[in-house]
Structures are given as C-alpha cells and as structure tokens.
Length: 167
Image 1 (cartoon, rainbow, N blue to C red):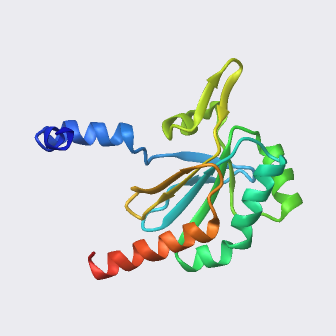
Image 2: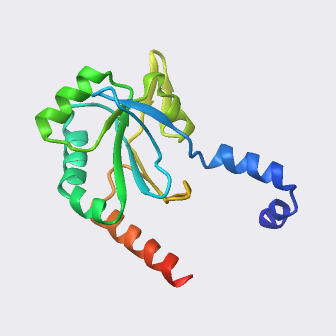
C-alpha cells in the first residue's frame, strides 16, 4: 500500500524524500589537507568508525587495507570517516599503513546525514556503519558493525555484473 502511495507522489516531492532518506553529498577533508567527495563514476565505501586507535576500528580498517588492491581493481574508493582531528587521523594512518583517506567529519554532520550517530551530550557518538555507494551515488549496501570486506567485494562484483547484463 505504501509503495502505491509513493508512486503517485509528484516527482519533486519524491526527489526531496529520496534526498533525505538516501544521502549522497559529502565533502570532507583528510588529515593531509586534501578534500574528498564521492567521485563521479566510481564506487565508494564509506566506513564510519567511532575512534582512531581503538581495537575494533583498527581491525576493521586493517581489513579494508588488506583488500585495498582488489577494491581499487573494481573501481572502488575507500574512505574512513569520524570526527577526530587531522593529527589523530595522521598518527592512526601512519601507524597502520592506511593508504586510503581518513576524513574529518567535524561535528558529525555527515555521519548524522547518513544516520550513523547517537546524540549524546558533548557531541555525537558514531555508530560503526559501512555504506557502499555506486557510481550514480546511490546507496547499494548499508551495514551496521563491521561487515566482512570479502562480502563487500562480492557485492560490488555482483552489482557490476548485474549492471553489465541489465538485470
């Protein structure tokens, strides 16, 4: 029933709802001063993680680093995102050899846009969340926690195959 109501909505209203429910625009700075946004025509994995140097976050991002070559072969960029400042990101990236950008989301505005924060006094708390976005900036996978990077790679391969075959 809800689906039939949504199909009857005027296009501008549907687009406004989609923009609110399915965020796609972000523009954040890395620890090295470079700015990043979802690149046109490329797949992206956004990894929202609670903190630099914590055991769970380190393991999760190390798994992305271990699979970074395969993700690059698939035309997929990886971005680690949290509110930590550049110096914290720099130390974390250098200590672990991360070659993908760790981006500073000051105030957690992008994390809130992607619905992966808990509002607490003193600022938002990031809920570990991974998003896979296609080249058209559509979310193709959203997962709380630390999904297997192997599963993400398989998802990209399947989605790319479906795009090629028109399925």
